[in-house]
Length: 266
Image 1 (tube, rainbow, N blue to C red):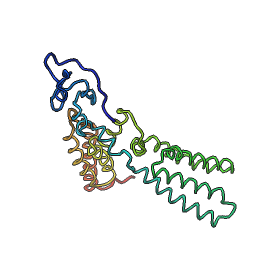
Image 2 (image 1 turned 135 degrees about the vertical axis):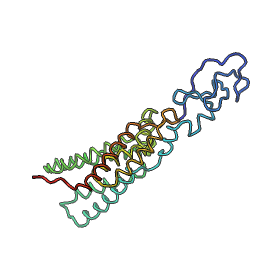
Image 3 (image 1 turned 60 degrees about the horizontal axis):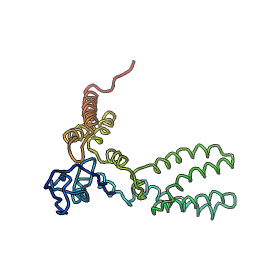
Image 4 (image 1 turned 45 degrees about the vertical axis):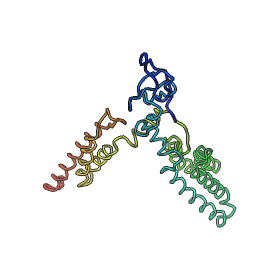
């Protein structure tokens, strides 16, 4: 994924491109300050850069995020791979020991295992095939007039759709995505993760003693890290503050409980 070139106003008479002295300069790189021409100018998040700086991972953090997961198995892929082993073993067992009554189920398990194995291997068609596994299961249940099978297929169907739409899983299958989608995924998984951890620990600290202290530490670090002007921008200020509040409340609650004990009713 490369940034797109775009015209820019001239820097004035006499300015020449650093890499192409025969070309007039259209502007200066935001990072290194060298002049560039139309052939060298790249836009990264609406900021102009020269060719060299635009390719740096510290400049284009979304490209760095994309490359981190591009063609690499995520947690979902490994989970589906484990399912493949379970399906194949179960299918072989039913085929050998189940008799004619279990033939349809055995074949379904074997096919589902093959689809999951291809998913783990990164075969593009298996992304959609994985969604069809619970649909086929529900269809077989419908034919056999087994309403419980329909109910049991709902959650796997919702999960398979969620995996199909997951950004990191799409990157494993090398699906190109717009920068805005990458930005949302980066914010979810990478942006000030310690502040997000502090918030979650703050919630847990209300139910488990001692966790609130860890929440206070993580949230304090997360709040200190917040810098909206950094490259990339570091956010989650609200989550860091919420983690501090919840962590403090959790600590006070367990201290109070240790002093006074559980309240007695009646």
